[in-house]
Length: 242
Ligand SMILES: O=C(O)CCC(=O)C(=O)O
Ligand SMILES: [Fe+2]
Image (cartoon, rainbow, N blue to C red; front, top):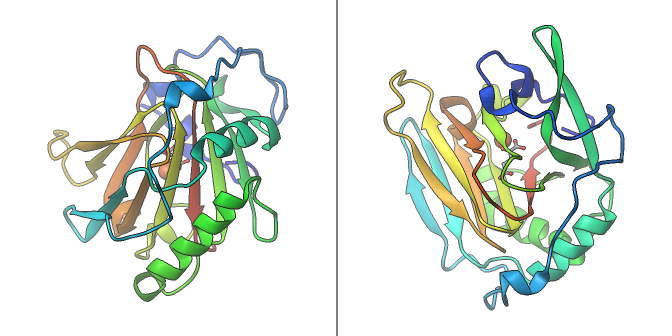
């Protein structure tokens, strides 16, 4: 995403993006023409979050994959949402699929190493995640990929974050979510019948960390839904994991 290609958007069978003719975009344009109807009051006050890890629930998946979930984890989630909407240099991208070029159904931007994050709560979140997971991960979280799902038509198709070390090594991708709740769906790669799938609703201020072998043994997606307001996610990743 951002400066790094996200090839699953153009992978055959990714029907998530087959029906997205509604946004006029150019590659790497900053323009998009869908109205944003965010009202912070819609989301209510976030829980008294303090970047703590006492309430984290670990869900062991198969094949050495796991998911940690903490609800209402991010402080100042309302402000993070509005600051990100306004200040992230969002990009609408397009991908080739067969003989067509299609819109990537979300806006994206990746903060690389050395780039300031748009809100101090996100900087604090990255530091808290790096400290907490250091014994297990062995390195800090370095980059911050951002996604903007403008409504229920925006989505991410099934994929693992397997560009770089995620295809060979255990690693972690920590996702913070603000705005309307959306479902993060997960399915094991080794079952062709789709059994074993599960999903977690990611609400305003929630944290979800995919760890262990999750990127190479499982896939994840944010499916389209009939109706949803805007939702933003920040994916913190270590060096050379995309
Ligand atoms: O928005 C999310 O929660 C997931 C995004 C994602 O999987 C990705 O960008 O690789
Ligand atoms: Fe991903």
